[in-house]
Length: 202
Image 1 (cartoon, rainbow, N blue to C red):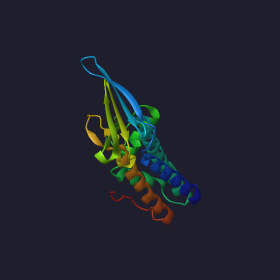
Image 2 (image 1 turned 135 degrees about the horizontal axis):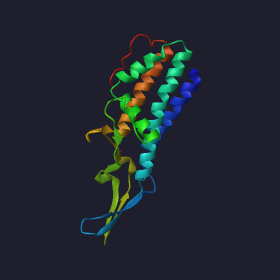
Image 3 (image 1 turned 45 degrees about the vertical axis):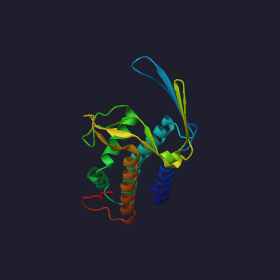
Image 4 (image 1 turned 90 degrees about the vertical axis):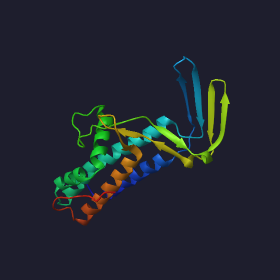
């Protein structure tokens, strides 16, 4: 694994981060049936759909975790101890959770949990400030929201542990995990990955 290949990998990760920050889109439509049997339709216009937001988060989480194996190969090719990569990952507060999420997404379940928390992902939601909304239209059994400024919308994708407690947000977790891997990459390129590593908390 060459330095050029690692640089290209992290450029790809940068593009995936950018994709999670693109919020404008064609929108979403869904129905909700209340306890009394009445069904209402909700339409969101001018915003990335829930599925697209989820896809961008999934791609970033999986590729962020895949980068760890590339860094191990880079460390090995430059004569450094690959176990130090694993030690650095395990010492980080976020990367073991990224690992579990990526493995859960790839395999549909977790046999073992690197973090010990057995995390999974909840459902995408978004929060729009008043300035983000261009119009709000109420019809019989239908509500339509037109987003005028998608940059003011915040998407969330909760991370849930095996006890049902929320651990944080997947978008933030992936971004922090990537930052930790970038610090680890810099140490590998500098040839300073010696001894038992401990990454600083982001």
